[in-house]
Length: 249
Image (cartoon, rainbow, N blue to C red):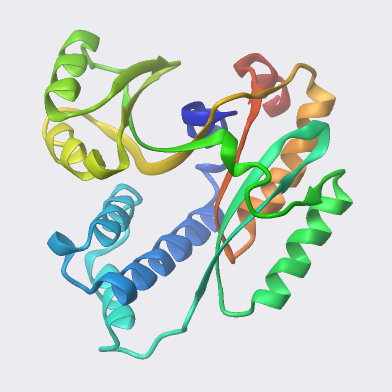
């Protein structure tokens, strides 16, 4: 589940859940509001906002809903003031975890995160305790169905991508974060994009090689991923597709 393959591995567990979609929308809209508050409401002049709007379009969030979130950020509409925090720690089996958080109550959120990690065999760490193992990258996930790999490779590299990797039924186009939006603009005109976001890619991974351990970790992952204040969960777990399929049976 590590790195660029995380989305491909968990999408089948969650994509069909309406409640999950609502939570995804809430998190994306929260990011749009914060991005607009810090960098202004002009998408062309605010790269962070532009990236969040791309995520909104990929998730089929209506344009007027996106516009309201931007206006909340710029102060044109009343909105909540969120604090940005990154928590680092460990899950069971020594899995490194990074949590990107937007919260209006830091004390509540950190207490809940500490409780979840401790209850599931992990612990909250200091800043820098695991982030050294992660590199921020743009990842554009493109459906492999009907996609010519050579054509995609040429188009992606010409647009400024760093690499293209096959991952099951999709391709992962990896970019420098600064070039993510430009590459996305080129590829969306020619290919079917399933997901596009800035990710934290781990340098080393922890392999989980049996179903019981995978289920134990995924229970923690799901709790963190579903938390309304946690925008992103990044980790260095490595769970094979075979084990994921056994879990879904």
